[in-house]
Image 1 (cartoon, rainbow, N blue to C red):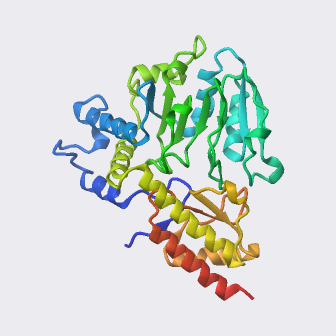
Image 2: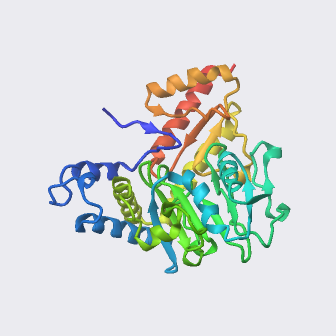
Image 3: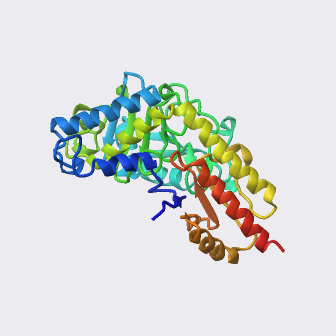
Length: 361
């Protein structure tokens, strides 16, 4: 069977080269006689996999030495709770920037631990914009400022890194991490679910500045304390070993193709092509203001909702899958993460052109 073009928002497409390596190593990793899935996470074979993955990730993102990298269970959603649990530090209040579904979910968890100040929101534009920072009402005494650089569902992305002074900046980078270079030193915490640009579902990566570790309330469950994981190299209990292994293969693939600068050029070109066609088509529409459009998730609508089923059926016939928009917003959504080849975007545009020509008028 030929590979399809998978536009799923997550779990998402993985590099074919990575899948081929995993296939070759499935039953016998490097002569060990074991699959990675069978290895003890404390054995020398698996420790070498885990250590290399962290080294490669640190290289890709130029992570400073005073940051810990944690490979954890629970996806990004658990981090919605772990961040306030560990970072409130007795201050009792945190700032959140509300730009869509995932930032709203994060702030809802924050309210379980203290006062949440919604310092800015784009609800007045139906979450199709990013509020300019000069309009934000930040609290200089807040424990941290939380934002979501890319909203997967709405296809809204920040074009800037917020300035928060001495207040730690926390970012849910689940759907944008590794898509371009970033300056990690501008953040207190970066966290990301793996299933978009990193690897399989089940893993979350947390990059945290060391001074923010060790502030969980007394009596905290050990698994909710960043200190537990930092002191045990993410192996206090059995981690999601296979997801960690595949993520390491992805990191090595990114380094092989030239790193995040090269990846950024590819991603910008893919997104630029798709938006350019949508805008020029006179048939499809993207609801997001141009300055806030995502490189990773491109929502679009057809002239009539009743065309959606026909569009999706035709796409499926030619191997363009998972284009249906999130149930909360409808329409279509093409998620074009790192592993989506440019040929996939070209194939989508060709199909969109053909569909429009057959249904326009």
